[in-house]
Length: 353
Image (cartoon, rainbow, N blue to C red; front, side, top):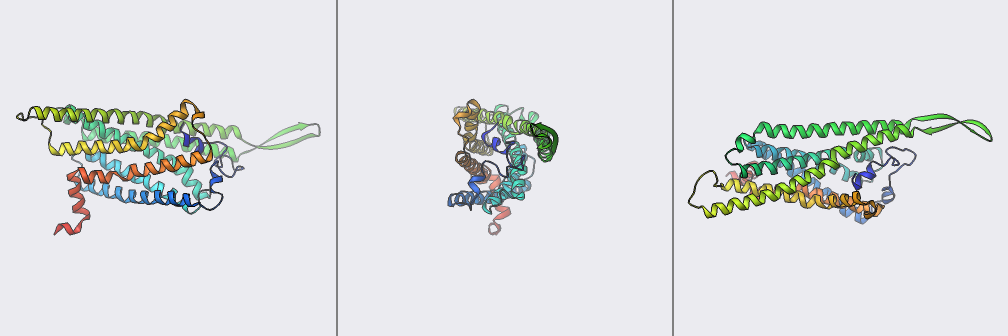
């Protein structure tokens, strides 16, 4: 279980226990937002707004370019995932800026859309794995890659990941429903003491805790466990891709006179560079949270679970994720000449003259 999820899945929070009225972070928001809140939240909001626009542009560009290439299918769906996450985080940042975090709308955004954003984040990681290993297959098996990596395979892998995450989210929402139902159920039991007998009304904590357990299991299987596996797959795949790319360049330099399947085209080189850049961005932005979660898993005492620390961690995670979702467009524009051409045709109207 990750550090941040322990706050969202706390059975003593306002989500599961109406008598509490807030979660452990509420003390940081009882007054108006501080100047630090305004700066970080406003900056994150601006980045996520840009990310939404950038990924909407990415979707249009890859759609216009077509899906003959399997890479375009992967980049297209990655842009959709990034767009959805960005829109969810925009709504959450707006709620925070307007002090709506603990209103019914704010609780809905934080506690119900949070599982969706985490699931889509995991799906985006899965698509990044597909992109990485697809390019690795292309450079490792140039003669067999068209038979191995097909559009049908890529679409099946992406849809399979989406169905897995959707199933896990539905199970999580079932847990939320059971937990909320238990927190609202009042059990009347007979109670006897020296003054006689009377009836005692208590919350159905057994049902509430059962629902919370389902929610925690759902979070583990839709986010925590897959993210570690996918992170390792991306790191390993990126290292192998860089090595194979370097090896291929060396072979080409030593066999300049040889022309055949081993000769890598300029377009293929640019595509590999863009894939490596996307993977490096992912690794850099995801590593801090994974490292923190690993320390917390090894020994929870290594990560202080106080309001200030978790609040700072949430800001850092939000900041790194915002860059992760927003910066890909610059990679495509700089490295991918075909993307750049389609982008100019779509959005740079003056260039048509």
